[in-house]
Length: 108
Image (cartoon, rainbow, N blue to C red; front, side, top):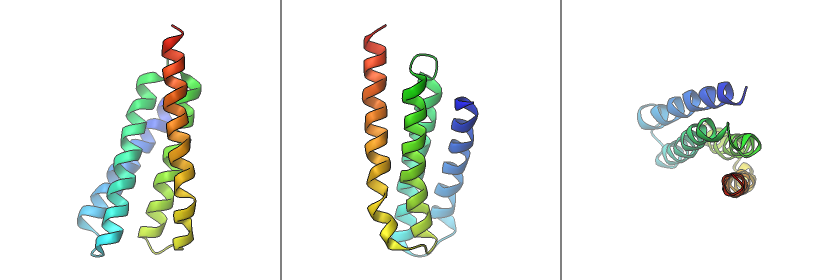
C-alpha cells in the first residue's frame, strides 16, 4: 500500500510542478508549486526505496511530504496564507522519517 501511495504522490508532484511551470503567472504561486513538487517527488521515490527496510519511516515521509506539499499547493491556488504555518509540520515529519530510516538501516 505504501508503494501505491508513493506512486500516486509522485504523479501528483509531477502534475503540480508542470502546472507551476506552465499554468500560473504569479511567481510566488509558481515557486510554491515547484517547491512542493520537488519535495513530494523526492520523498515518494525515497519511500519506495526504503519500504522494505523501514516501512514506518517511509509512511512518515509520505505523510510529511503530503502535508508540506499540499499546504503549498493550496496557497498557490488561492487558499488561505495561514496554511504556511502548517507547512513546517510536514517538513519536521519528513526529517523524522529520514532519522527513523537511518536508525532502521543502522540496525541491519
